[in-house]
Length: 352
Image (cartoon, rainbow, N blue to C red; front, side, top):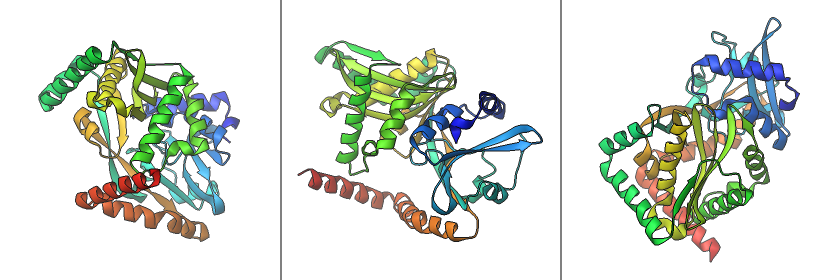
């Protein structure tokens, strides 16, 4: 269980991440695994030893017949093992030692040589680079999409004139603001025909606990854009000293004409740069707002490694048909557009 790790082991985990040379994505820190363990009773951490010293950690969840999955799979945006540089255990032998028949992932970190060979698909995660400061980021936006930046800033000024003073809080601690965000996000999921993540109790509890987490490399961060004294857009994510992992953004649709979500992301980028954070990771999944805001892209992977047996067969039956169907649709833009319209239509029918 994650809570059984000693502070010495947790500190060693942090040291391994620091030495890895990869971005310090907060989803890969022990604090995230620990909080998942408090809401998901099947959460586990395998500790790999080289002699008497811990040389690696594999956070995971264990299901029926030993089906394994990345910790927080379905909501975690960065996954994999935390290993000492140069350590390369046999993947299937590791699964056997963990009594796992499979290990599934959907946002595998690109540097995960242990599991990347078993990936079925490569996806793109969209990032904003503010390493050189916010002004440098604005310069990039002016070069690549000058109309977008000019229009968004004009809408922000118009919002102030027509609704009231615009105020941004990078790290809002008001629980009511978090509840408002979750209500907006649930409504958005239902409006677009998507599964409402906040209808799942464990996700609501996970976000609530992470909102209270204050660790150097994993801090729950609620950012809110106010206008006229009321919240009109908000985002909850996790931040480390160098990465802000964007997670749950939403806005009040009554103010859609002002593009409050875009304004919010610009202010988040500005605040993150001021804090010394170099990158905002907006996660995988194509979206128009990501194309407008991004400065680059990184690969992430989806798939599973399996061992022969009933557990592997159960994994295939439970995940592969749906994954392949989704992949088929994603790779065909016209079909994806039809599917999105169908989901929205079904959502409207359910509401009527």
